[in-house]
Image (cartoon, rainbow over all chains, first blue to last red):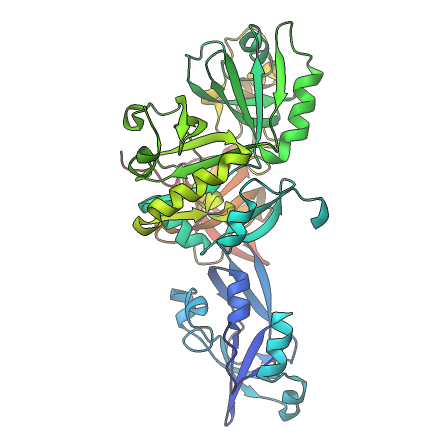
Length: 126
Length: 368
């Protein structure tokens, strides 16, 4: 199970990478593996305002529908266009090509509620 | 049911060793997937897959009176089965609803009845309640007997080296033979639930691991994959085969589910005959159709189906279909007037209408 050092994590198995005024959000390797083959991702529209911990869509695998939560608040500036064509990219490359959302972070304090790689790894391997 | 009460099949240790994801199913801890559902699906369509189906019920029926007695409980004919023939058959309730869908295997001097895992207790009670006519003895092999299926276009070539004294290529579809696989006594049947060629092997549980591991050891390198119940469900849906609890239930009759081909109304009497005959005659009943749903969002069980704003039915099964270029396919129970091929319907997915088209079943048919 891969848990890259430089990212922040939520207990709901999302990761976030903050680079300047953009935050990239995805699901973790643990999450994609637990879900199995991902066949559909439903995300908010560009411009939508989302709240940390809020439900922002669904991820569907062959067998199940799972809610997707955002690890930080902000405004959606981009959704991954590849997911419409090949949702399995989330399985193949959850921290890279399989990212889900880009946000303009709304509240810099949000990161205090997130986990480090080491803290997340403890939760995911419990 | 809690984990502590779940049973394990004879192949449980093999599943753990192979890294299977185990889930509770029909009272057992069953593998839902190993490497991944789509990968396993593709193995069966292109090469071959190996399934543990030991959760299914196996009843042995013995005695002179079996066929005549079974013909009073089922919609298809039992007495006309040839030696070593297998036949799909359905037990109904008096209303014509489906009690279980099954396969009868006529063997040498006895019969094997295979029932759905979730219906084992119900079916055992049903058979015993309709007290067998004189000369019928019932044996429940559930939990002791194993069932291994090998399914896919390479089933014959992969299984043949492990079977002595039997030419598998010449065995007819829906026939069986008693023989040995890896030296283990087995009933070898050319049946399955995937829409591909293949065999089902009925064996004693304690020797099932020899067959399972022997086949995998010999053929993993040429693409034999262990397959779980997830891929099995996807394969059977593509092949248009009903799954009990979805397309067939105590409320959904075989006539509604498109299984009238198995209904033998010329039999003098059987449970459900009057209701099924009347339904067929009346014609105006909700029925199972195949749908192709536009877009990527899967249609799932119990989602509502509409025709021009009017609710006309519900989804019974749904999945992406890798054999159809990952289109979303589903079965739905819809009113008779909206069941015609080509009818445009809408499936409600999380409050949004998704267009769908009624198409013929099966979705997938193998090239022979």
